[in-house]
Each structure stands twice: as structure tokens, then as C-alpha cells.
Length: 367
Ligand SMILES: Nc1ncnc2c1ncn2[C@@H]1O[C@H](COP(=O)(O)OP(=O)(O)OP(=O)(O)O)[C@@H](O)[C@H]1O
Image 1 (tube, rainbow, N blue to C red):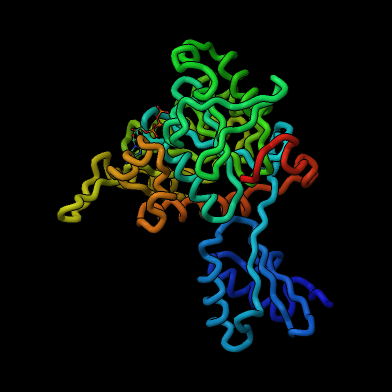
Image 2: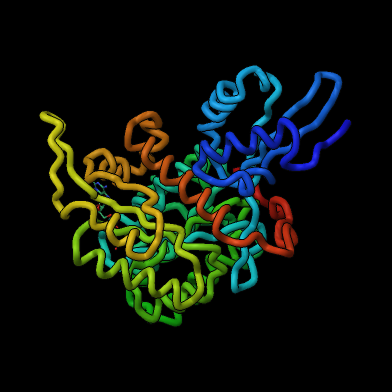
């Protein structure tokens, strides 16, 4: 068996085509491509550092067509491996990347986006969990359809995460009545988040999506500092008021040195089901302009859609109920863009996999 030098031979050519496919440079894609000679001939393996499972067959077809006869079906193997990325705080056992989903303004669809993004990442082949840090208005239990359930604990110190539709989750909403958490002061709220994060027996996860409380005040700042965030995503509507607050959200993460991977514009437009006309209820392209101003990618633009609201209220995740709908396709595009942006723009942890200990003892089943 023989592995070629990265960048040479057929693997080098594959890297070049792959670079054009993803609008990157061959320097970016060369480390993903390796070549091996065995009794079947030259075999090429591509290891993507982000999740994009739904695109594997498109990528394969594109490469075979572009490399005209040099690469054949059965010669190419595509897989993905998501690394842990650097954080300023010690990582949480078993979690490779904690990603905050934040918004400056309340009610812009941050929780809805968190849940749909989490399932979209899962459909792209990542192992994903969700943590509801919206201590004052936890809505994840309703959106996952398991409101009223409680985490189990065998030692009164650690909790098993809840499981819903293949996703692991925890939320203050599973632990205390909402009226109780609503009156907590800042330090208690941040302590609760830290406990939820540290005392849940998370299985190995590529991404833990954290639905942050809305706003950019002291509580959110403390949370952003205490949680080992690899990065953040900011959700906004295109409306001026929401954009001004989203801007504050971006600045808050900059202040605590957490990279912002991009913006998601929610409620971008409403499309009439009868005539197809698009109405820009909250103004047009505000998210795009804000993203441009900050040199950030616009990861996605989602419409105001009754289906998004209905699935959130019913606890039947849109991505699972209607996986092929244009909305689900848009969420998966946003998930791939987010995952790719993390892989390309944030450094990989130098101490590697030390914090990955396998499934914690006592955990039932796999995610
Ligand atoms: N794209 C959308 N289309 C239709 N309804 C939406 C969309 N996004 C969110 N909603 C609805 O808007 C309401 C607010 O959404 P959500 O709870 O996700 O916002 P939030 O920003 O997390 O709110 P909070 O500030 O309370 O945490 C919910 O009723 C949700 O179902």
C-alpha cells in the first residue's frame, strides 16, 4: 500500500477541481485529498473537514465529469471528519464545537433557526445536540415536542440529555417551571447555563448548538465568556430595528474574541401561496447589507412561512417532516455554509481529541 504526497498525482488534480467547486484555492483542498495504490489501482479519498453529506454524490459526479476519464466511479471515496476548534475556555467533555445562535433583538426567530439548523446539520451527517440557554423563555422543549419531560439522573449530579427525533437536548425548561426561571437574576442565570453545559452527560458531538437568550446585555456577555464557544451565528430580520441590535450582537462576540461565522436573515420575505408574489414585509436585503459591512457571509435567507411556524409549534421538526421542501433545502444550505465557514476560518485545537472520552458511562443508545 502506498500513500502519495498530498497535492501530487491524481489527488492533486482532484484537489484542484474540488477547489473550483467550492470557490477555494487548491492550497485549501489539498489536505483533504489523499491517494492510495492497492490491487484495484489508484484509490482517492477525500476527507471533508465540514459536513456536507447530501452533496457527496454531486461532488463525485462533478469530479468524474471534470477529470474526463482520469477518475472513474468506484475509485473515489468521500467522507467527512469534523475537528474541534479553539476556544478561550476549557472545552466541555465530548463536545467538539459549541456554536452560539444569537440575536440582538427578541422574537426574530433565533430558537426556530437553532432547531432547524441543528436538524439540518444532522441531515448533513454531523452528530448534533442542542442546548437551550434562553433561560428566560425556553422554547426548545416545545419545538422538539417533548415539553413536560425531565432529564434522568442516576447520581444526582449529572443529567442524561433528553432525546427527541435523534437529537440530544437539554433546557432549563425541562428542569424548572418557566415562572421560576423568569425571575432569576444575571449570576443565577449564567450559573444555570454553566451547569446545564457541564453536568449533562453529552455523547460525542460534532456540534452543540446553543440557543442564547436574546439581547446583548451583561447576562449575554457573561454567558458568551463562560461557555467554550468555537463560534457564533447571528440571526436577524431585514428590519432596521433588528439589524441595529444584530450589529450589537456581532460587536459583543468581537469583544469576547468569539468568531462570528455569519448571519442568517429570517423572515426575509413572504411568498403568497396563491399567486407566488414576494412581499418584503420587514424590508429587503438588510441582512445582506449588514453582512457586507462586517465582511461576514450571509449563511441563509429564510422566508416568513406558515410551515416554519406550524412545525415549531407542533414540535414536529420541519427538516424531518418535509425533508425535501425548498425550506429544508435552504436550511441545509445554511448548515453546510456554517460548517464550512467554521472549518476554514477557525483554527483547529492543538490538543486535539483529549476532551473526547467516548459516550459517557450510563448513556443509553447512540445519537
Ligand atoms: N421564518 C419564520 N416563518 C414564520 N414564523 C416564524 C419564522 N421564524 C420564527 N417564526 C415564529 O416567530 C415566533 C418567534 O420565533 P422564535 O421563538 O424562534 O424567536 P426568538 O428570537 O427565539 O424569540 P425569543 O426572543 O423569545 O427567544 C415563533 O412563533 C415562531 O414560530
